[in-house]
Length: 240
Image 1 (cartoon, rainbow, N blue to C red):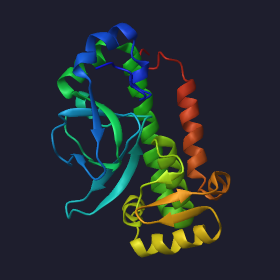
Image 2 (tube, rainbow, N blue to C red):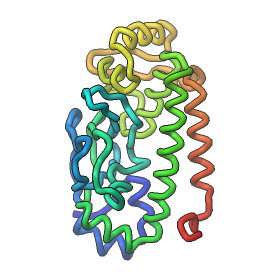
Image 3 (cartoon, rainbow, N blue to C red):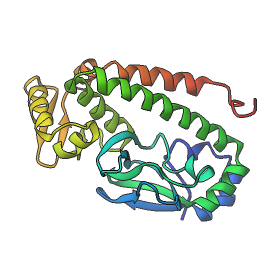
Image 4 (cartoon, rainbow, N blue to C red):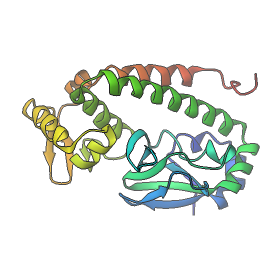
């Protein structure tokens, strides 16, 4: 199978290295609702979505969970852990199905050692994830659900292939935001009356991207700015 990824991290790998390791990179179709990794399990695979969306959920010992971020074509799941503790401290759930690549953690570690470009890309990705995680702590405590919902819908659209037609149910959005489904129902109705979105069975359509962007919490702009600064950083960030 031809190795032609759309994932922004995989496209950074040097052509010669990509050719050498392409036999170990498997093209897979992720199915909505599939659990790729449970909390506390050994990381066996590293996942690179092309147009799927993976939700990372943090769980407590009682089994309660809240979203810790979403990974799409801009990132990877398991890449950092595979080179560290080799254990996952998040549950990886396929939120939006689609194409992805996966590689066994053992082969990934060899790939990581062979590709300076990959090391830089992963470093920048992890830095962006840390910034996003910290920002979302403040977001949950400070911002209204309506503004947070706008941000999540825009992020899901940007990081997957679905554009304006998202297969995210109210239950799934409630889990991502850590609120009651009834809260999402009320909030979605308000956004629909305002002409920003349209709720439908099994998902939601974005009607007005510009107004949804204006209504989203400031965290979206803060995170976007941080990602731009990280992308502009010199590529020798890991070299000292």
